[in-house]
Image (tube, rainbow, N blue to C red):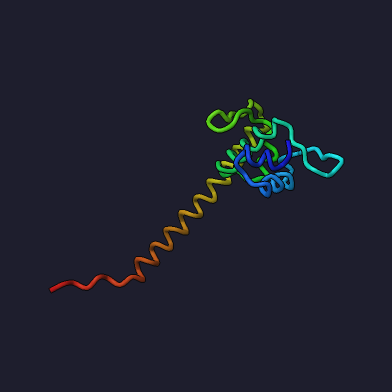
Amino acid sequence: MKIGELARRAGVTTRTLRYYEEQDLLHPERQPNGYRSYPESALLRVEQIRDLLAAGLSTRVIRVVVPCFEGSGSELRPQVDEELAANLAREVEEMDVRIDALVRNRDAVCRFLHSATPAPAESK
C-alpha cells in the first residue's frame, strides 16, 4: 500500500510515517517511480511503535525492541528474550531516575512557591 493509505488506516500523518522511516523503525520498499510501498504488516508495526512511544520508550529503544513484540494495543506482548528483558529493565531504571528528578524539582518549586506567596490577610 502507498504511504497515504497506511497513514489513513493507522490514524497517523504521512509525516509521522516518514519520521518512523528516518528513525529506522519502518522499512518501505521503493517503487521504480520513487513511491513508498508498505506491506500489510506495516499497519501492525505502526500500531506497535505508537503503543511503545505512548509507554514512554524512545525511538532508539523502540528500534531495538519492536522486532521482539507481537500484537498491538491491549494485546501488545513481548516475546521471551533475554536481551529484550535487559533492555527494558535498563529503560525502567532510566525512567525511575527521570521520575525522581521531576519529583525533586516539583517539590523544590512548591516550597519556593509556598515561601514566596504572601499569607492571606486575616479578616476582622
